[in-house]
Image 1 (tube, rainbow, N blue to C red):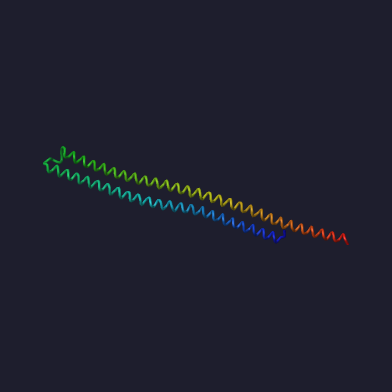
Image 2: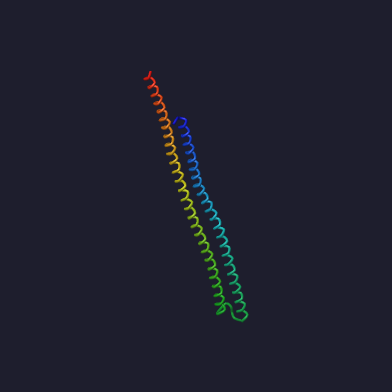
Length: 193
């Protein structure tokens, strides 16, 4: 093997090294992209969750408002019925009926408010759980890609050094064998004369 063959082998080793380096960079970019995508998805999910919670709050407020209107109408109807019968509304049974209607209305309003609050909490918990899962998956993938990128570069460095060493040793050995062969021929020619 001559020195120009060794040079070609070194160039081939350098090309393989650069290819591995490019592959390693791609792996690192994939790791970074995974984290960026995970962060983007988490932010989008948080935004959607807030919008959903505002919608829930609005619906809960509307439900509580409707319940209050219904309770006020029932109180008005009961007051009119009691007043039309000639009973005194401020005392006795008509008053107990009005109090009962008002309490039922308040309980229904509280129920609507608590249901809204619980639905909002459930949505928030679900969003947080999904975000944690997404971030964990993105992080695990990114760490794996970073490790693979490091292993690829470490392997490329070792292979490059081994191939360059082999090419140089082969070129040197080829040079020695030519020199020794040439030397033997010259020594042999000197003995003949």
